[in-house]
Image 1 (cartoon, one colour):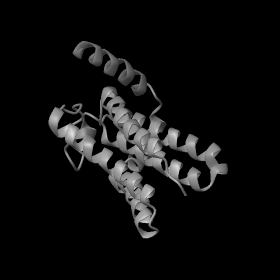
Image 2 (cartoon, rainbow, N blue to C red):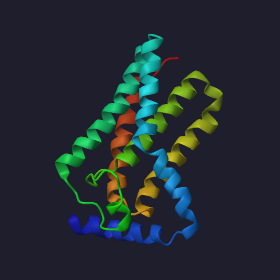
Image 3 (cartoon, one colour):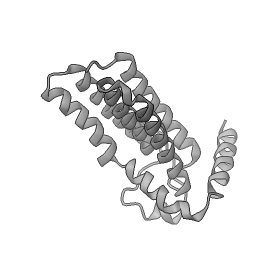
Length: 176
């Protein structure tokens, strides 16, 4: 199993490393959009909105998104996978473990939650909201591999965790 994961990480990492150098700035922007002030902020805003307007579905949805991020943090502590060794990782302010990617999980669950809330209120914007959420979640994950913060399998694990949280939110449904 470890050899399969290493081959996957190597294959995807080599592919992403071939992306043009001018992508560096956009990748830093996508990584920024995956930072907790944005991802937790979206979830907290939905939770707060629900609490203020007595809409329990929004409170539950925001709580699930935050819970997904807490879960990924606990997984990091439990699994303790080392990050790639490079200058980007050495310069990170917070030195955490690698698997799963919190940025990937947070990007998927939080931007997915934002799209779901917006579409539940204004169904006509679904054609824009969902593709934007998908592109953001994908780009945030790719940015983590591009910048060297994570292995591809870390991002895949983060996306799976984020998808599980978003699936639970969608399963419960949010009524405007």
